[in-house]
Image (cartoon, rainbow, N blue to C red; front, side):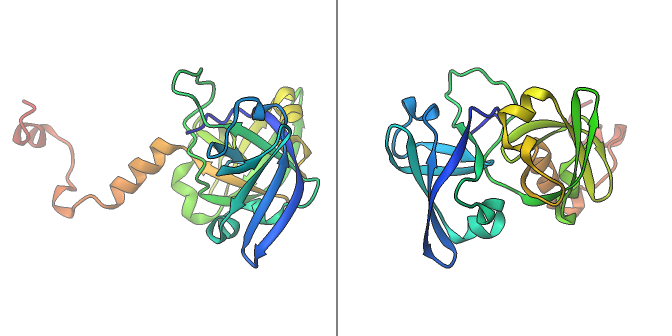
Length: 216
């Protein structure tokens, strides 16, 4: 479990192509490795991956075909900057929102608009994610916890303050770039449950229904 608060910007040092759709990355990240161990989970651009090897300043992760296909990690190159966050400790401060590190889809940055001290990012998302986004709701973009303040049929808009622009890789993104999107966990679970509600229980909530179920 993660919070969407980025701890460090890492750099891709090496990419080993194990097969056509399986990859091993070596990532430079001296700060978060101070108390990391082999087997720990680290979110890389919002994707939960496992540390398989480490030195004092870098660590390795293996990326399986499903992750390559479903996320923007396939576009990484030597020198690419990535957002990094360690899994949240049980006694840690919770600064963002519940982030699982399981990306729902990739989206495309379609507009950047400077506004006073902020930059508005409009991100286009695939149709199957439409139910996950709501005004003032949370979303993780490349692992960053952000708040949605505008939603349309095919896109949503978030605002980046100067700190987020400088401390994450999102400030370096340009129109056309692909980002990882993870919708709010609560919304996803409720949406899933509603899809599979038995038809005989699909009824309007009223006084009669409450009485029949022992609430009155």
